[in-house]
Image (cartoon, rainbow, N blue to C red; front, side, top):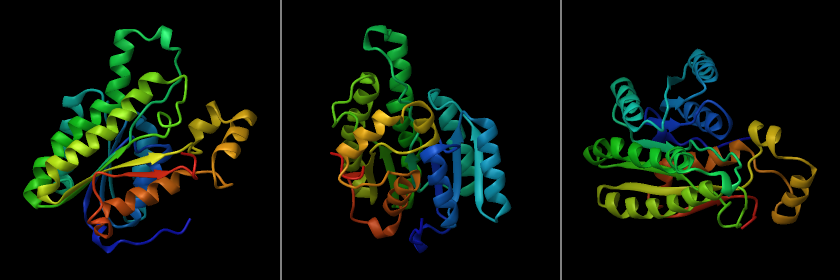
Length: 253
């Protein structure tokens, strides 16, 4: 996939959650190729370390930390370490999520809270950590991740869809809070993205038929398609884009 080069991203400090695989990996690779100073976290330590070593070997400024983003204090400490290495974060990508299917009757209060933590709360506390530095710099771009799942009334993941719907409200509120400091806050809304996890767990013949019926475009949404949108929103080319939903779903919703 051929992507644009954004000069405004060169040397810009970027923090990405869930960057070791899938969509997150594509985002890390995209920002690395732009010459940004990238810090990313993930629970997948082996994969994260391997990706960081690969990109460092090609001359890119990329650092990885093993981190549980559902532990807000641990995650904020990781962000501080990235800022010590690369400077105050000016691009935050709240990518990490977990869309494991669960029967709504089996969700306990503890499991509900865990799902909210991994799909919503970490984004809030990451914004809390980076916003002071962005305010001091008088600039910044925050990209939250929504989902078309709640728009399409998808069954099987009610806590996930609740968290993703809430993300849209959080984006708009923070856009108003931070806009006076020239900080932009947007939501990227992926459709059904063909990551390895999706292909291994859920994309079967029936899923292919559903995608063919639902999308306007005949091809499949790839991780790189999402990364391209995120990279654009982080760049100065998107300087007047804020409080918006940017849907990348092949024309599903």
